[in-house]
Length: 97
Image (cartoon, rainbow, N blue to C red; front, top):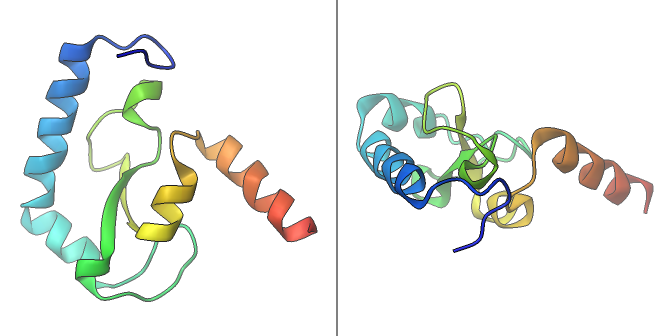
């Protein structure tokens, strides 16, 4: 599998496993209980929020509390593997349209 930064597959596997564990934690349940998408600010039921890595794993991000936020499925899908600055540029482009 080719990645942006050629992150070793084993590292990606470990980080994805950490993310799965994080989704089962009380910390994550508390985060999604607010029902807020980190990106669009929309309100959603907790089961409609996904865990998004602000800095994507394939770009060197980690599965840590500081890098994981709740996101609605639409924002998470649109953000893909973008870095925060790239995502903001995308949003700015949409606002100008």
